[in-house]
Image (cartoon, rainbow, N blue to C red; front, side, top):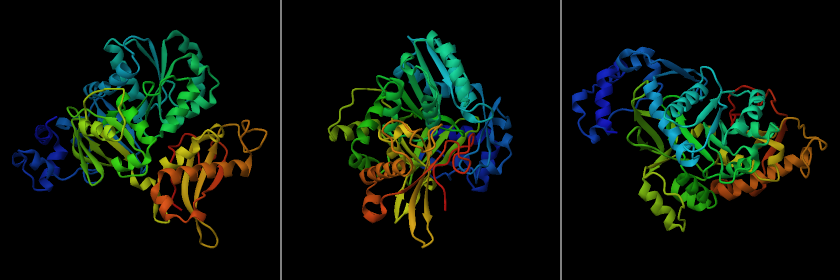
Length: 466
């Protein structure tokens, strides 16, 4: 994508962007080089999309034929029109996953959309992209039970035996809930997983592979990096997954590459479709979407790595990937910085906590959902506190828990120890800054669906301010 050419197209066709340029005293004719483009002001929700009526944000002032709604991290809804032409571009990302990793050209596939249906961006958008793939000749049949576990459990036994493989598409914690709570013969159906919306650990990937009987998680899973604003921006490939798995086993090497103790989502993206920039550890993108966006600052922490530099780096650390993959750049995404807590000056990330809950000694008793916070006691001492959701049907009583898992305070203590060991291993700030006697977190157990921490149907938040 030529960003200067895109800029001139948007400046000529989008009324809101014309006003935005006028407010900043910018003449489109003055933008002729990439250096000129890089001096353009960022657009954001606050300074751009929320300040203009929806039609004026669209090409020629015309709203597209479908509107998706996102609540974002603030809970204030945003509206994102798009057309079939926008979906065809995004369907290319799905096609890459289904073709190159899942071999869906040659295998009949039941694609089960487990994202929420309705106005929200995930479910219907995914369904439409899958229909585009079917229209391109892929033997893919889609069914969309959405985020209804009972409906998923009802339709899968009837449909799955008629296909060579089953692909579940949904948010990571929900897919884990489905796999753990639905007593289904997963290993008989050659299950694959497509996720979006959250960073997950390689321990999570391995755990899901084990529970579904998946032989090769490198070619049986894929995470999509997307936003409601612009659809899917990049996707995991077998190459990016191999590299991420290597880095997960070498935290020091990962810190050297990413500059963080947490492991980001690592995807490859097509620069002919989405133009990315890195600014002070965050990402900007430009693209001709239903709402065309120029230098849009999405507040995701992350960065960009050229294909050649990535391979040179991992080879320099003794790793040679088996996969070749597309020769496209990599983007890595941590998420938003305000989803962390500070404890003794160390940033503690939800991703660090999740790995502790995915250890084999505790994973059988928990859903993977938790709330991370720093709580003051009556003496004003601060404690790193993790409230953990138990699997459905478990209440912490010894008779309810899986064999070998201790009850009540025993389980809480086991979880606390697993979390602390992973924090010490992965988070060098935590290990260095937090006094050893304060490193063991306080763990509180709650039943599945606890209304105070895990209300059913609500978008889960992994951190809480105290």
